[in-house]
Image (cartoon, rainbow, N blue to C red; front, side):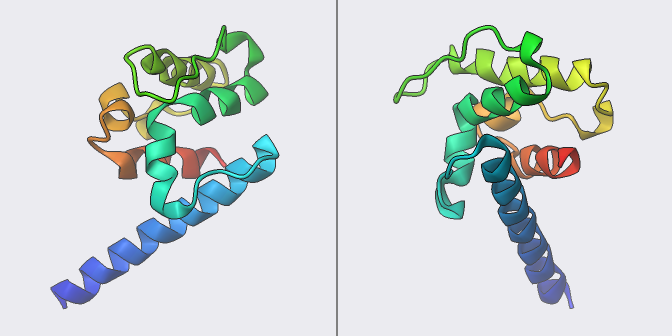
Amino acid sequence: MDEERSKFRVYEYLCHVGETKEWMERLLKKELAPISGFENQLQYGITLAELAKLFSPESVKKIFESEKLQFRHSDNINYFFDALKNIQFPEIFYFELTDCYEKKNMPKVIYCLHALR
């Protein structure tokens, strides 16, 4: 029974990833990384900042773009947090900066985005 629950959780998570990715692609009008690389793409915060710019343009100053992960990418994630605050998104869905930037808890990032959609 525990193995079935575990498999169901994985299945449910992958469904959330797919739904979130498709929703973001529709909003951003561009193709994002495949599901296998989607979490890595989110880590840079670029797509999060682009998304934030859509629903709270004043929250995003300048999106930092670089192919190599740098600490300045955390600014992009912080722009996303500012946008969430501006639209009064419930804090219970927020994730921590390190959840995304250091990929410590990517499911929490995905669940936040899934709740946002």
